[in-house]
Amino acid sequence: MYSQRTIVRPVCVEGIGIHTGRMVRATFNPACEGSGINFVRIDLGGKAVPASYSFVSSTRRGTTLERDGARVATVEHLLAALSILGIDNLTVELDGEEIPILDGSALPFIGLLRQASIRDLDAARRVLRLTEPVWLVSGEAVMCAFPAVEYSLEVLVNFPYIGAQRVAVDYDDPALAEQVAPARTFGFREEVEALLRQGLALGGSLDNALIFGPEGCSVPLRFADEPARHKLLDMIGDLALLGGVPLATFVGIKSGHFQHVEMAVAFMERSEFVA
Image 1: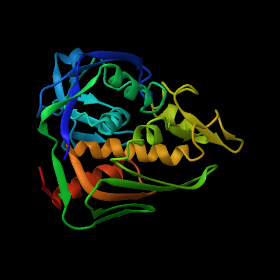
Image 2 (image 1 turned 120 degrees about the vertical axis):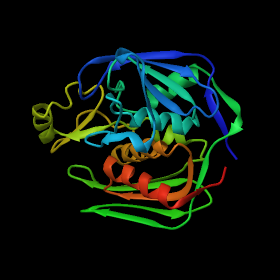
Image 3 (image 1 turned 30 degrees about the vertical axis):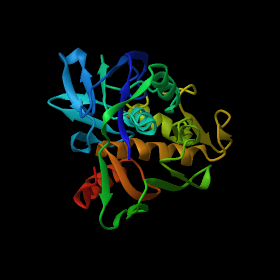
Image 4 (image 1 turned 60 degrees about the vertical axis):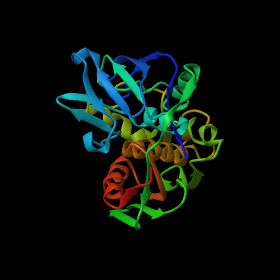
């Protein structure tokens, strides 16, 4: 159904981490079939962290992976770009602990990876079929999944200054990258000082995040429903930690990284390999 993919040649990008405020260089290297996505901390002597839900150590304001003392933070936008492009084999070398935020969306990663050229490998991608519905409820947040013959996602949000928004996509839609990848991360004006006191958002700026307040958004939106689209982008990135294409319909209502990762765990307990 799907072929495994990698890139043809290495490509790199440098940028600031939105939470650490530190510059980091990321180099994307081709990998052979069956390798999966692996982050390598070259500043820690080459310690590797696989892109798997099994290694999630935090979902606070982003998804963080950790193994053997090596952390890789804010992986969701890059993983969403890789998932959208169907790239399942890649080695990402980092000289710091956080993926560059760039413009706050997955669009720069999409462009960079396309510049590196994407090629199909001989092996088929791993496909997982959900065998029964899954419902997860955490306060007002709901995350559910239903067995299906294709992979699709739907997000419903209701935020202050934004209101209720809904967006749904099919994973196989050729326009998926254009529909979702440009949506930028966002926050609220009253949160900014609190985040800084907690040592977060040290690299945040109007160049990489939308800030909403009583007067509206800090910059012009790319989509009228950009916040909902970004939440869907996050969901795609977090579910990429499954390491395959999940045949299911996922619905998130006020969900976030925590619910997405909890769903990945529950999904694996109720799924079977198709290929």
